[in-house]
Length: 365
Ligand code: PMP
Image 1 (tube, rainbow, N blue to C red):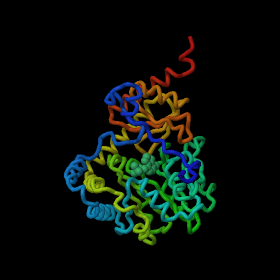
Image 2: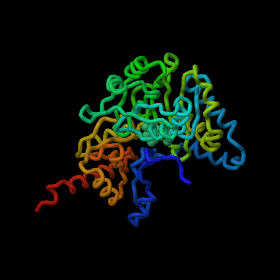
Image 3: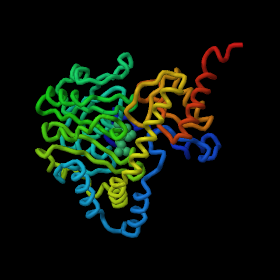
Image 4: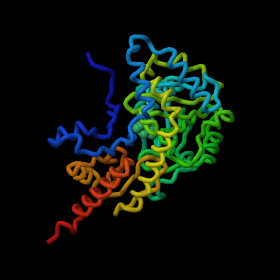
């Protein structure tokens, strides 16, 4: 007895956790600064914590009212109909729902390279496959409809990530329009806005009125600080919004997650503080790191360090966990998340120290 042929499937490589690294290195997790997973260094909104505590005694009941309330609140925020909001377990859950709703066996999707790996993982789970378009370092990772369309060959779904993980580059709104207009009628363009709160560009959600082949992904994992609860959504055009009822995993968005998201969405102070810190930190990285960095619209910065694996291991030993982007296809770079001011300053000190120590001339007599 064997599972189906999974040889084409890759495992997801997450940023390493503080507990895990501490165990490996025989350190106390408290001594480590984790800047490898683009998490919110301010933690969740206190209102979300209170909502989780208040809801805890009721988790014997399936999440129904909370799911409805959250859907309504998100719809109100964006001026959408409730049916256009597909609440899911993280934005990852929405990626699966879109795969389920759109992919027939052997359909292809088009994804950025480097890029977020779950798009193609999800396509493969759903018996599809993925082709890639390049976001090139030679062009400073600039994103354009033209570059995407030059690789496009009628795929069923085209993913664009803005701000892009791991490079931080932004796909301008006019380019999103061009993309939606230029692809075939039966191609869905998915704009992944997991990091959009940190960017200056407005959301593409208001374009859903104009295009019925566009969907937008959002998450509570980053700016709202709820990564551990797994809650996100897709905003979709009304023309096919009713597919949700047919593809949704029942109750996948859990009670505590829905209640926390409902509280977090109205805590503007926490959101503003989170965004403001990230904007400060990414400028600080640009100015203070002694290695090339790229402009980022997200809560992280990509840095060119030489041997990423060696640098990530060395920073870890000095207490700062950064993301080696080799698994994204960038073995010469690390991605460092925006921390609190103190964490960000520590990261700069440690990264600069490691890079200086690992430079070839540093080992010469
Ligand atoms: N899209 C991008 C570009 C991401 O980086 C992530 C998380 N790392 C996600 C989607 C998924 O986020 P979540 O499932 O936590 O909402």
